[in-house]
Amino acid sequence: MIKQLLSLTKIFFLVFLLQGMLTVRGQQATGSWQLFDTDHPADQMIVAIHIDDAAGSTVDNTGQEDVTVVVQQAIDHLFNTGGGTIYFPEGRYRFDGSLVIRESVKLRGDFKVPDGSAVTGTLFEPRGGRNNASADPFITVRGSACIDGFTIWYPEQEASNIVPYPVTILFERNSNNRYPKHCTTARCINLVNSYFGIDIGLINTALPMLANIYGSPLKKGIRINECSDVSRIFDIHFSPDYWAQSELPGAPAESGPHAVFMLEQGHAIDYLRSDNGFNGFWYIHGYRTGMTLNSNYSAGPFYNLKFTECGVALILRSVNQVPACFTDCIFEGSDAALIQDGMTGAAQFNTSVFRSTSRTVTSGEPGIFSASQVTFHECIFDAPAHLSNYYSF
Image 1: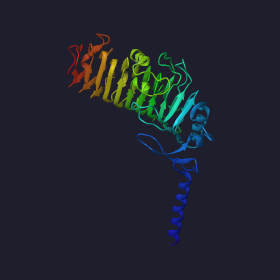
Image 2 (image 1 turned 45 degrees about the vertical axis):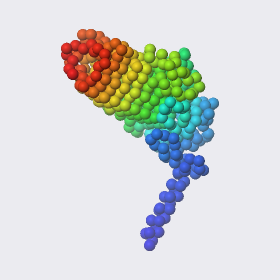
Image 3 (image 1 turned 90 degrees about the vertical axis):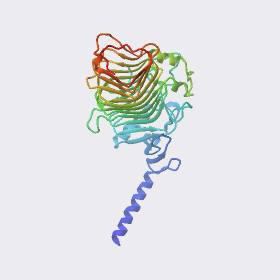
Image 4 (image 1 turned 180 degrees about the horizontal axis):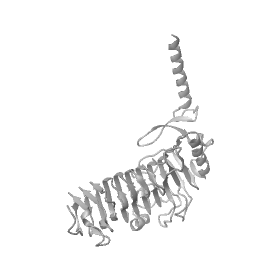
């Protein structure tokens, strides 16, 4: 009997603790940690700290006040107390400076997949770094940290007068051993009009993950710079249409000057180095260069990529001897679908389509590459392919 009473006492005590920690949004909060029912395509119910509780004061969500300092203090506080998730409810948050999401901390907002309707949810508005591409990134995400569920919009960028801004999101390897140095994540992000969207690793990183990334990055979408192991990049949607359809102030027409800029200068995906990678379901539209794959890329599949109405869909440059494999892809470019530019490595294309108004496959520098290391299996070419006798099909 005594044992049963003790067990019941423990249960009631645990229930009491949980009631003190958790509350549903809209009810009176009785503690810092709460259960929130959010707008999100994947994880609606989350346990997190409201940004006001993490900051210790009300954080402006009207876009009128700069909240950089108070948000960074909230991130630092959560890091120093062991980590967790900070929830930013729907609203507009103005940033005149930069943020660093420290190890073990996750920023989480309200997010709806942009489907041609007006942008809603949690909106971050960076204003710093105008005309300075080398300034600090707007958001630096360190190892084992995450940003999830945000629209990022530069209110001072003009479609008719596009100017440089620094990187919007940088993945960075942390410099201590308290937490894993890698495993940085960005998910459900709308880069409405970033100049340079996401940069993975100026210093060696590993296991980065990008998923459900949307927007109209103007100059460059994603660069994978130094990844020593297994990048995972899925569900990427870049097109001039996302800014045009946002209905945010100053949004251009769908075929506006920003679309001309992107088709003349835009570079959607720039692979510099990744030792293995899993990549799939990319939808890239309206860029000068859809994707470049460079000499340090090593192995890993590319599945269901669609590059449409680009100048050049794909450029291969001296790919590593471990093949890059493409399956069920569409490469469409007005100048060329595929250019082998100094190609000396190996690539395989399976059940893919190459479209162009002039030539589907050609070499950037004739005579430099070894064409025998590129194979095409059950592929379709709807315009002439400039191939040597060493290509196999």
